[in-house]
Length: 388
Image (cartoon, rainbow, N blue to C red; front, side):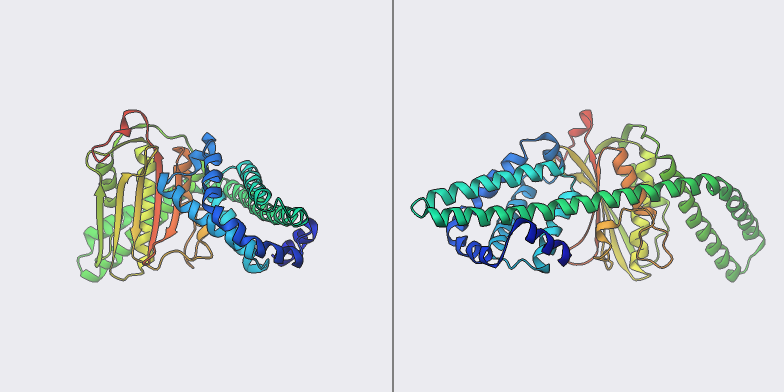
């Protein structure tokens, strides 16, 4: 993205002299960074839609403030190279990922500009030429920052358009072949059942087990295709989460050596579509099983309170984790790192989350492995659980 960065730098007028001037402002502005961060997020959180995007409560806001302080420091110090652009773009992509509307980035940068100007005016009031030059350099820096942020939103908009095109293609394919595949798969499954009664030798039984396993895989792909194509609204009802998770795991073949644990907050219940949530959890556990690649490991399915707005269904494994290059796009249809993968499992999970007005979040665990969180809004009386 060097060409984009160079173009914007030329457009806003940020040059080497500005870079040196900004570095010289660090001792003046650094003591105020924490106050700037407090003001920045106080203004963002005044807006309900922005507040909804930040789902981690006070702990997440504290982390964001800490990151913002580091962002201000590195912005003043430079240099304005590819590494600078990538750091800024990463922050912008994070805002996109949590669904923070871009208009709040524009207004928040404006708040930061006012804070910078206020401190510079107070500290450089007796040196007017330096004050004007410093304010001009800060303005150019923040214009560059904002341009990079908005670029990440534009790229996300393009990605969403491509995602929509993929979904439309999937819908056409599903409508054409989905139901037709059910019939031959049903015949194969019935024939395998009859052959199982006829064949008594152990080798024959093993091959029939493989046939049944592959039929289940095919049925799962067809189900995902049809579910993505239909995108039907959820049928809300009260769900006993423990029962739902037990039912999900009963549909997954767990290899020998893999331990699966279920952890549920006492008395926890949700309002949601049990069938859709079961399918989402099946997909997540299957993904974890596949990620372990036949090795022993542990998979934990957890249901807990995320905060006052969301419950969380979480699947954690100790496999290799997500490919960092694909992590920002793992919920897109047809995106997969597996040579034999189809790339529908996590897309369906994201679709289920969206239809429940929730969120799907994927990340790599610090100690290794993958974590996927399905955040679901509390509804009505279900917001009060025994673990709260």
